[in-house]
Image 1 (spheres, rainbow over the protein chains, first blue to last red):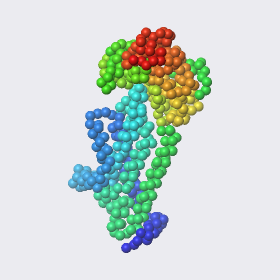
Image 2: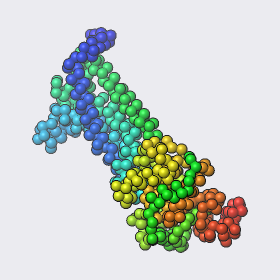
Image 3: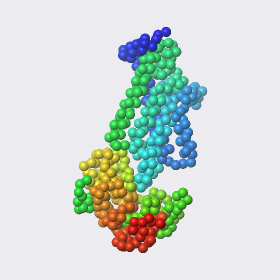
Image 4: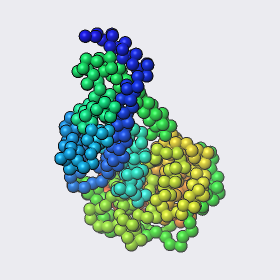
Length: 235
Length: 258
């Protein structure tokens, strides 16, 4: 049993020596999570804006559902995607199970409600400010959405950030649909879980450090960018 | 804000407001608007047409802002109808109208981009955008700030920009809801000068104001409302010399309006 100090030393060694397998895992994690957030953003931001702007029967209920889905348990999402993609499932023919694509699908489902719900909040607030002005210009309904999304660009960055945080840190969904296959679907969180149970605490801790540093620096970078450009535009 | 040359204003406005032979025609018939089970606006008949500046005066809560929103079609009456050139104002009727709000509503973009946005939803051909934007920048006195973030402008500059955005649509009728209520005399002067020249060029102006001095400076006629009802409609001189309704009389003498 190695103690924490030894593990940390080992971890730093792995990070600083540019261990190839470690960085491959880090890279795959980023690829999967950032792709998932990008896709979720492309769908979730317009959908959130749609919920903010349009009035239709059942809208209130839909908003509540989307808000509630923010707390979806990753393992359940993983299980559902697994059932869909497994050989006997409806999308089995695509043969996506145990590929990074399957992991992206699962993370999109996890992140989508977060991006949609937060976008709705951001856009609804803006819509309150601009509604009469838009109406006066003869712009209403769906046609206001592109403008509102652009006006809310700084607030929407925060929605995406929340999505990145969720995606990069979750383990349940990617473990189930990815299968944690070495060199194929092994990402930071699944490796940490595996190496810890194997007792290889050095690798686990090294990845833990990288994960934390990445999560924090992505957040810091994006919020700095959002804040300085928001100041520039006096948003 | 620099001192404004009136010839200069008229010249830049001329590039934005086309010469028109037809004048706007707006009618309200049996218009009622209710909120929380109370009748807030009750106007049996009112027509706004031809040239000039109408200032709507009245105490707080009289329904001035509601009335102007009904006219512009931002809210729909519970009874009666508002028509503009024969069309219901809520739909296509709102084309060729514009409105300036009490608190300027500007996009989180540079000054020129705000003007471009207003033009985009009008019927100005794209090829004329640059000329229009140039003229509107001169008009609002913001030519040297065209790349500045609109929301970093001063209150007076913001309202001048909002007015320029409204004029960008070359409206036949322009509504304003207390546009100068939080502006200093300089900015107020510029707004009033622009409104005056726009009116000379044939833009019908309907403005809510709480300033009697402003009404005296600017108005051709005064519409006095209280309790949601039109109490007086008089030429500006007649109104200030002696309004016919008791409510307006009380208002002018500085007492509480019943």
